Structure formats: structure tokens, C-alpha cells
Image (cartoon, rainbow, N blue to C red):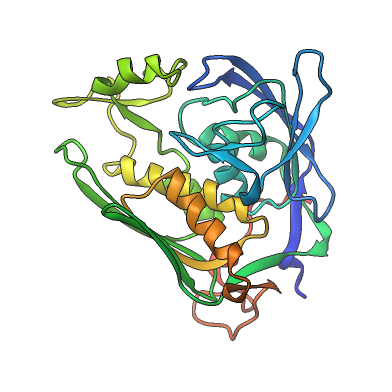
Length: 315
């Protein structure tokens, strides 16, 4: 097995602080290196007299998907809004990290994955002694909800996402983006896309206990006539790019990376997680494999598909 298919972790620990977009609670997160085959695990601290709790970032540990993705039991220590951090880790090809967090929600930072990418880059990554494994999708798994759908299809050359949104407002309208995930594409095309919301929904969300930490510093706010943020959009189609960012993070709950083609229309956290859970219910729909090998094609390096490229390695 070529060295490029070894598992990755962080070179050193790195800390970030901010507030939760829904809870409004100040929180500190420390990303620590982790051993091979441990995946992404959260160490939930600050539980007011109760012991610290480990919560694995896995599809079978999801407890809610309304407006964000939550893992763990809320009564005993859960972690909310994990999708942007998980998106950064999966987007950069990082396999094993211990996420120490002293509050109930990952900080929203600027509403994108870019601050997490910057933190990871500040310490770098190292290759580990074990080869990476993948979840290879063997047959199409599809779920539908209203006019929307989400599906995972066989795709052996890496992880392709095809995300389409359709909002009944001219500010967004119908947008579609297709990409093959690798670190360079993630950094350039997805990582800086921010979460967004409509001003008309703010009062309802506040009454429901959501968006208590939202501001123009961490959310693209939409009024009837357009974007309210003074600086405007980071990308012309920032909305579908952020939905793609969310999908990458939610689907990272597979554990090992997916070899699949993901398609969604009018999806979101609920359908991202639901299609993943449906995949794992059907044991004939997937296989656990080692890194794929194939014949070199133009643009490849030593037969390594661009879709299987890795993040910065400072070893």
C-alpha cells in the first residue's frame, strides 16, 4: 500500500474559542492528535459535576438534525452543530482527532469551515502507521422527503457530491454544484461558504431556542430584497456551496471515508444523516475496503486519483 493512503492525524493540539450559533454559549474547542483507527471523537467536558463523556462522531449516535446535527444524549452530554468542524476534517483528509469541548455546541466562528482549516494548517498533519479504510457503496440507497431526495450511488474513484437547492425566493433560487472532494478543491471552493438564514424567521427561531448566537459576523442574513451583510457574498453561489459543506460534514459520520456519489435535491441535515443511516441498515449496500488502486490516467501522480489526495503533510 502506498504511503499516501496512510491514516492522518494532527501534528499537535490546537485551540479555538467562540460562541454557539444556536445556544449563544461561549465555548472552547481543542483539537488533539489521536491514535490510529480511533476516528473523530468528542470529549465533552464542563458537565456541571458530572464526569467528562466521550461521544463518537458516528451516524448511529445522532440525536437530532433540526437546523444542525447533534450527537450524543442531550441529558448526559451531547455536542451540537458538529457539521462545519467535521467538514473541515473530512475535507482535509484527516482520520483521527480527539475534539475536547467544554460546552454543548461547537463554536460557529465565521459561519464556515475556514477557521477550522486555518487552525489545522497552523499545526499541520502527520501520516500514521495504519492504512486507511473506506466505506464503498455497492448499490444505490435513496430516501425522499416531500419534493426533496438524497441518495448514495456507487462511485469507485473517490467521493463525488452533487448538491442542488431550490428556494422560492429570487435571492437564492435554484443552484447546483458538483465536485469531487479533495483538499485543494475543499479549500478553494467550499471551506469559506457561510451558513445563511432569513430575517423573517429570526423571531420564530429565538422563541424555539435557536439562533441565539447568530449575527452578521457568522451568518449570511437574507432580507426580502437581498443579502443584508455589508460585505455581500464570498461566492456568487455561496448558498449551495454551504449546503455542500454541510453535506460533507454530515456524511463524515460514516466513520471511514465514503467511496460514493452523493446526490441531493432540497436536502439538509436530516436527509444527509437519514440516507447514511439507511446505507448502514442494508449490509449488502456497502463494503469496507482498503484504498482503491487503479491504472494511472492523465493528471494522476503514481496512480493516485485526485479525489484521493490528502491535506498538507509537514513530516
